[in-house]
Length: 317
Length: 297
Image (cartoon, rainbow over all chains, first blue to last red; front, top):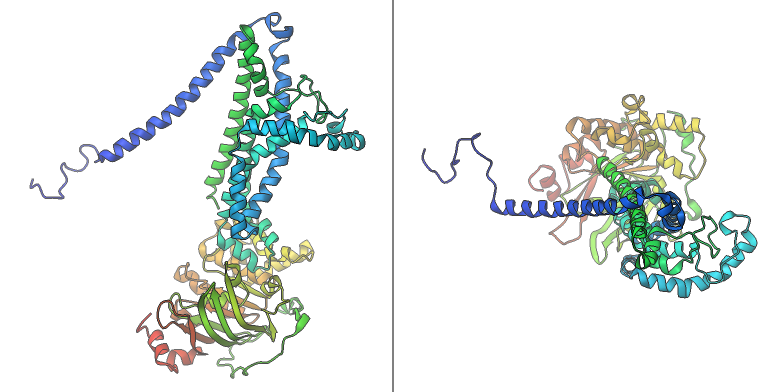
């Protein structure tokens, strides 16, 4: 066989396909990085389950306050879900509005600076949000919650008596909403901007106003992304610790009353408050609550992922 | 198609009727083959200068577009024919910094008048684009009815059904889709999608239909189907079509306008417009002849 410059070294079919060393190094690195993520995730899960196990199997009498584990965790789960729900209800419409404003309504210069400022919200540490919440937003909310309980007290959410310090579930939810706003907004904005020009133009060419065009083309196009972004935001709200720990005045009561000084705690805030003073089985109980939080956030994120992938399967258009 | 007559009652927005000055009378129509079902409106552009920011894209364009005729615009890429087309229904101004100087008269009313609402202009001057782009989240039925739903008037369901069927039939698509009106429009072939876009544009009964290279993304069979359709549509609408395909201009149009640029970076100029037969057999200018005979471009 004459060794021509481009003749194959072996007959086709025998031996392996040719791979460049660069490709091999890169794929090795990528696989290593991917595996590390999996290992860390598995490690966290194993740690949580292992440490929570003594609390799960312990007799009720040994647990704090002699309450069963379910009774201990349930108010915390309730508080976590309630504060996150408030945050989502407030943040998502606002995020959509801001995203539409920056992607389709504002002139370029304004839109760029607004986007930048919204992104900057994400860079503020949560402890700052917490301090701001308890020092500024809380006291400012007192007259409003007072008024709400006076006039809308028949609605369970505003049953009252209104807190005089403003350390309420409502304020905690508001601060959480501000914290997740940039995430939801960024995801929505990116997708709104990708709405195909051709679709926007055909809507306008049919005689749609700008708002009608947005409703007809942009919102349907971005809908699944908004859902996915909200889920990412929800994931953050569920796990947020510092701001809630600082703001919320906690009694462990299960109540839908958002403006009183009696509130359920959240899982993350409860761990932050209790962990330094705990020992023995109490630590295991706290870790068990952490396991529940881990399961909730994992479920939320996986739900978001399936929505995103369904959108991609649909062609992304 | 007498029902279209009644649909034509859409009032022209002549809050301020501009000076009705047909700058020149339409020449005797070349081929009075197609019978006119509904008198559509004429467009007269006067001294139109079209800009992207400071860049002058089309210079001093004056043209009379005759009602119920097909006017084709040909010319090499980048010579401003699409830009000119988009300035006829105020789509051009949607681009940042884009503006237009001069007048575009729709039956004598200046669509660039200060108090003219671009939304109303676009309701009367519809558009079909190069890429077939039905709304992906909507069904075939909803796509066809999309423009009607916008017109703020409540249309009864039965009436809407009638208009959808009529528009799809008019776009030669009804027989192919009547059993799957509620299916997503994305499942149609490219040619079907483009006919759906034509149905969508005609459902709101515009006066004028602008088509920006409507066949350049389609195969020859689908192209022929669209050309047949154009011949049919001119009974009801005034049609302006931009095309890269000279055979298409020769086959499908009554008038042909030729855009050219001196050199890259210069503004595009409408150098000659005349009856299609004349442009292709005996054009006035040498450059037109060179272009239509394929000697350049």
